[in-house]
View 1 (cartoon, rainbow, N blue to C red):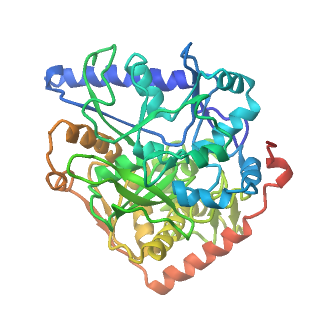
View 2: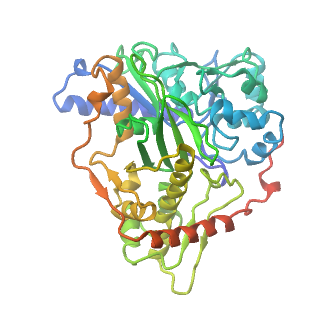
Length: 478
């Protein structure tokens, strides 16, 4: 990921593709070294970053700009302008997402107004748009397949959440003419033929049969198949998905309505409420790479364990503003409560606690939107390896935190989607026992009053971190 400025986050699309090709080669070599044959592979799944926006020329196949990644906030001023447009208040009821710097729609709008090649290609009717799943599938299949699954399409803002089609009113709001831009066909997450076959490489001729956005894949990998189940993935960011069943729930408390998965056959599309936290594991990286408090990520937990508490420090890790449920785009990372007694361990502990406090805020919002409180929170992702972080999460929420032994649930979810398409499993009930052994459950070790006191201090810090980004610094004119 490249960062031209503090608010810009980009990928080289060619590197994304080459990294996947390298991963395939290495995985096949490892697979074969363990005594398996390629003929043992019956299906292949793909999972990807959502929202990240890629545009390319349909004739040349060349990208027109770097991929603008999901945490990018260069569009903050643009979003403020878009919110003033007629019809802005209707968007969330159509697509489930509020206007923010997060979805693909505003990233594409920025490209139109700031990259002449994008506008020229659009005017010529050759502009192709997609999230990483679409870009990878198009290339891996020899430019034969141009599709996206419903979980990814629901993160662009362009898809009608109930009808699973591109909404003309939304496209019109963003000044998009469907005749001039090529949008990928929307299909289910588990498909026997829609995703095509590998055109080259060691998997040539093999089918891709499952595609899920990464957070939906994690929910599937955690077997969150019933309404009321939820998972929280602690990666670069932190993403909490709550299964709401076969009908979307449109949040009035700062959350996102999204497609959880659609396996077709005898099942209905399943929806989720989502709370997205921009900074989680990236806060740990900040402590190691920027502040050099430790050399390796796991040492941050050791550092945090060197002190009994945060020493009064609160670290609002708003490096990309604050996402759900706050949606404060003029916030920046802020540490409160520093004293002459503050140690490195206090800052490390406060950084770990930041994701836990934001998760608490999301869970409170989910309870208000759904009318139900969560009984258990399934967790995964890199930061879930920290016992201290997971114990802190249980303490702050008062909810048991359930961690699997095998935590690569995103990969597992895409494999489940692929297998479901070709009959490896016939029903969701067959999947519920996968990855259930060796789980660790963290129970709260503090009182509700202690938890409430901690959260009150956090909430005060959130309000105090507002307004650090001046409007004139963020404005991008239409």
